[in-house]
Image 1 (tube, rainbow, N blue to C red):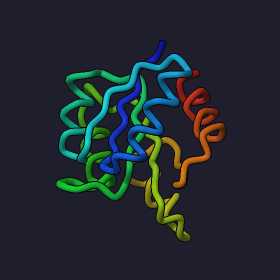
Image 2: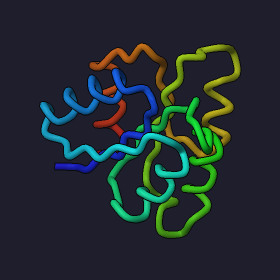
Image 3: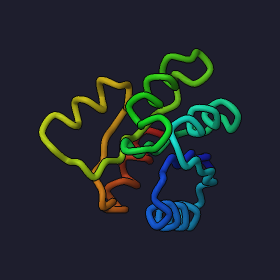
Length: 120
């Protein structure tokens, strides 16, 4: 099954998402800030990245731009996760290089369908 890198600083969100993804058969690795997410995108070679946009050290926008700028990680699909669902956020996430966008609190069936669509 596919490996998902979950980049999320909120412990409750991390626990809930990683448990539910593991139950669906995914391997889940976790980063707690954007810089760690960038490093793990190389070291873990995930099949997909779930990127919180409001992260410490390096925010999700900067982390995604960095991941998409590196030849070894630029093809990894990234789904932005943000609690700030305001007008223009989706476009901002896509402009940063995200392949899709979802809002928090996460509606798991909807997120799962986006993950499955990107993994083919």
